[in-house]
Image (cartoon, rainbow over the protein chains, first blue to last red):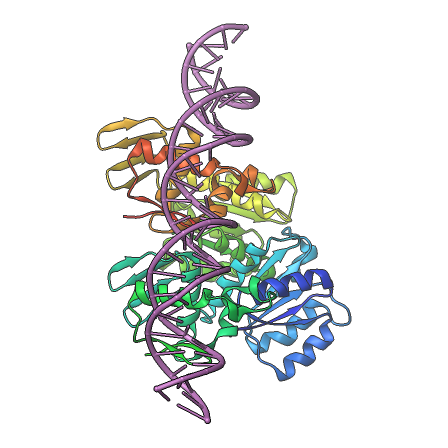
Length: 221
Length: 221
DNA sequence: CCTCTTTGTATCAAAATTGTTTCAAAAAAA
DNA sequence: TTTTTTTGAAACAATTTTGATACAAAGAGG
């Protein structure tokens, strides 16, 4: 799971970002000033950093100097961006930037692009003869296209991204049905099982997508 | 993909330009002095050059002399806003100029205009037996002309320029109905669907222009 | 073998999304 | 201006997806 550090002092904005990135499957750490970010970077590895320019204690530019040698991609978050001398320092090695206020979908798209540039993610996933083009929502088995519904698609992507790993039921619900995590009894519904069944049938995964009794499922090679 | 050379010695500004042009779908090469630009031009073909006047080693005007015989359009970038410089820049054969600081959208607009003037953007698009002449707004299926309304035309061009790529609903609205992106609920209108329907009917695209449920549409060969 | 728990499957109705028709307002053309 | 064309809103239909329910099958442990 990819780790993203969010350094943003406006808590509501930070919260919003964290919520959405978590939902999108990233592991998020939020900090609210440059100093604690520098500390955190001492001991942790991140795959990407979202960095606000205006920060207490150590500002974004200064922190950037600190990050640069680490070779971690940075996306700046800034309030205004014209090609002005005043914001000359803006990019200072950043991979991209976003101007507040921004749309969440845009943020997600930018993150995707940068992570791909850094080879942290792939847009085409494969498992045996199954190919999943996540950009275009195309699934193929061999040469024939298989049409999956959105939920089926999401679930398949989760399995391929975690192949050979046992995914527990809770975890699967968390990743694919995040809206349900609040409802009390997940065990009382057969939703997950049903979708597993559908994937198995459509993609002929009877022998690959295994049931781990009392735990969850595993897509095994 | 169109190739643009950026010759600008202030790295932050260069970075910012590169980021935005890349985002807009251009292939960018950035260099920081006139000499290496001259070298690069020996071996590579570019569709457009963004050229700063004040450059180390060989300045923008001198480099311009070098570029002129190559028939590559040049947009000058200059910090000096005096009229003299503007005139000098243009008379030395540049297609346009921008005075720093400038807005990114303005840069993009100028680039667009210049590229079109030089016919660098493909003017005749095709998909199967459909031909679209973007200069003259003529659409043909086989030999018979099909009359499309402006919006229909725009939408078709977007699809053909992005054939085999899934275009998400938001993206399509962004590209064809940019004026609507601010209104709250795009999901509450059937405008896109309606135009899709019209295109399908007029051009008999039932099997080619596919619906990707919960995503968008794709024109597939 | 029996019982309890967990997982698999079929059915079906609700929900979400997309397609279609109609029509009036807006824009363009005459 | 009047006429024609284009556009998109509204209402409704059709389709697709989703998950609830009920029950069957399979596994675990005695």
